[in-house]
Amino acid sequence: MQRRTFVLSFAAALAGCGFELRRAPELHFKAIQLVGFRPQSPLAGDLRRALQSVNATRVVEAASQAEVVLESLDDVREKGVVSSGTAGQVLEVQLRSRFSFRLRTPMGKELIPASEILLARDMTYNESIALAKEHEETLLYRAMETDIASQVLRRLASVQSL
Image 1 (cartoon, rainbow, N blue to C red):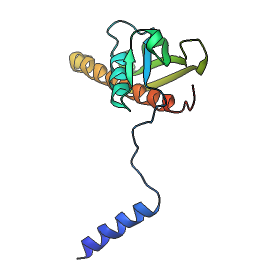
Image 2: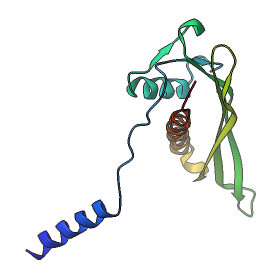
Image 3: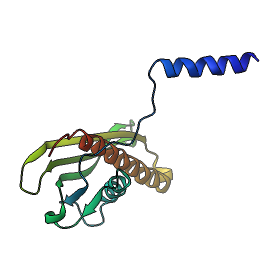
Image 4: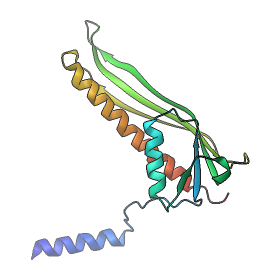
């Protein structure tokens, strides 16, 4: 009985404080063109899937069909040593994923000026399990690209008028 009362009071407190799960962003356009991405770019694929799942937004190939154009200016993966042992052996690396973009209309009107999203993740490194660490690195980069796609979507939702 006390447990049920606690759960109900906790739910009432959450509802009363304004807590709300994050909703899918609401985009104010129906057709978008993706330009400047590398062929077979995982980030472009994530963006394409995310855009198509929101408000029935279409990703088109021709600028004449698009209401807005998302232009990739830079999409870079970087890796740097954070710490090393006394023998010069790498102990920790930092993975960085940098994505620069801008949003404009097909006629060239800039809606979002050149913006950059930079994500970094630290990863321990051990040479004796290099294959496993390589797989972990791939998974971390994929997670960062998914996060970047989500952030880009939220920034696209901030555009109120074309």
